[in-house]
Length: 628
Image 1 (cartoon, rainbow, N blue to C red):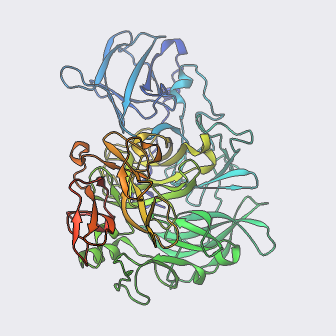
Image 2 (cartoon, rainbow, N blue to C red):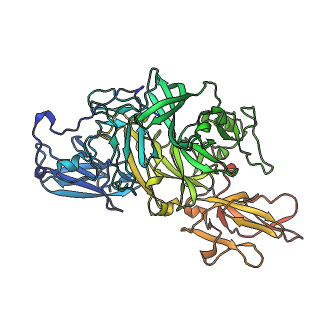
Image 3 (cartoon, rainbow, N blue to C red):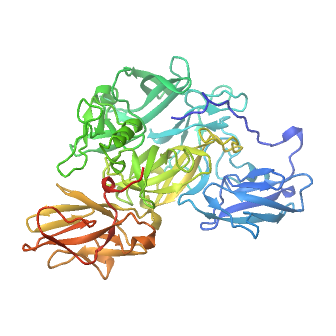
């Protein structure tokens, strides 16, 4: 987990409730401003309203601001309107804002255009989640709308369903009474939505485990100096088939160095973690990231760790989890080397699960790219931006199976994007190992961090069509010197509608060679190999490609109902000039037909290219022409 406490001093944020001992004005004395998403009509949290003299107000989780300023009531007041990933229209002078009459007891409603694909819902942690709504005398969906467990702010979350409840654990956490708070993992539970829990569209009712002072207690204080952080939270069976809640822990020293690693187990009676094992410092591989369970092709169930791409796994039982020699990494490096690359006969990287070898990191991969041993498109730590064809350097994320997409879906943050750690991307793959290739940005921030996104698969609705995720909103690492009051260093929830047409992302199209010709599919099976990427669903500017019934050739379809995939008619119209034409090539004298993109003829023989392409497809990432 990332943390700011070892770098920046904690920032205390006041609630302004009863400030300076003054009596709180009655609800009728306030002017209400409600900001809503113009598409859904839902209130938008985290919208900044700034007056001409730089008074700044921020909408609460209902999208509401309660305005009551001496000397500024019942007047025409101009408010600049600004929010990460949302946009208010410009006026004639280019200002994005509005002039409002601040009449007490009245309300103005502003509509924002959402630029983000994902929709911001509410703040999960911290103080004053529904502060302004309460000032206006309005209800809130959660039981503790102002201050819960005396928590002012919390770093990244890990969760697991255990003993019928959702268990939540966070990193370093702020409190009201002093800048230094809980550095050893606060803990809370909530009911699941299908077992009397709150609808995740509305919020989460957290029940914190607290100490005698009412502040969220330390749930994983391990011996030694510095904070304790946990990761890899998972429920696994022990040798007696009893479910155990386990996590990896690290001890941290300044500035952000790990000096000890190991495993902790949750004690059900004490409601806190106890030390279980320590990992040796020279262990070649440590797990990292949000885990998920998956039964692999060898018939065994594994815990996969998705710190970035899911490239570490271990057998799904307590014994395996405790044994660092059993952890495997998904790698293309030759055994015993740091730079030797394995490739398949077709030239693609040869990946395999292997124990006893360190996980590939960003530095190592970038050196392999610089040494021209792999291409940027082949990198296992990059995604490809579907809009530009450029690589996206990934940071931390989470991966889970999605029933609606029938694929593994990834929500992951980007390093060095529009903001250093504030961009969130969506990608999908047929297998946990990938290929993870083309991705779409779904959340953006203006010079602000939003790191360690965590999907909540147990919140998914409509058969997986609606996905929920949260991440840590903080000015840390962003270079921004103006933390957002109340929101900074807290968890913010989003929802993502997976039937959004912008999430129609290219998938691999596989060719299966046979005696009577090739079989094409977007599902990998047998010895099928990916030849290119294409869209699984129709979209504007696309043409449907299917199989001719008699000869089995690939052809454009008049109707797309039987389409195998969809290709672009003209990539220039779509603004995606990196797409390549897919041609039919026929070998003279044999009648053999193959399909390939580009203009270079296939090897071995006299090939004739079709006069016009079937369409334009997304190339294999390894063959993208990327300007570094």
